[in-house]
Length: 180
Image (cartoon, rainbow, N blue to C red; front, side):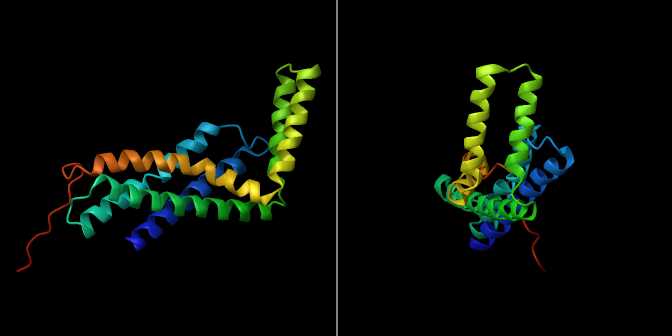
């Protein structure tokens, strides 16, 4: 079980962060231009949870798994994926001199200004965004925030996967031909 959790968790986390960083690099000065794309990447990468639970059900348990056992496996994969996501994100931040949040804030403020936000509303936004930059500089706040980006998606995929895979007729195990 541990090997399945580690393998699928690492694959899921690395695919997610590669996709997210890829969209940031692709979009250049607009690192937050498509949040939905980021969550779609997470959802696709976290489908490794379904695959991991199915593999455990079929190989270790003979094709039958209970809901709570499936949740345990899925949560294990989601936690490993989240930790991999955080570690690679921290490495990316270090390689880019921790400029992500400053660029994010600058493009956000630029977009709000272009949308016509001015005066007290704009000043309030600037103050809020500066507070966000300060908060993001603290790794003890930044790292849990990063983990919290991916883990709820993993939890959702875990619950759906566990509910589906507890039925042995859903994606049944392939029967192996008899050896002669």
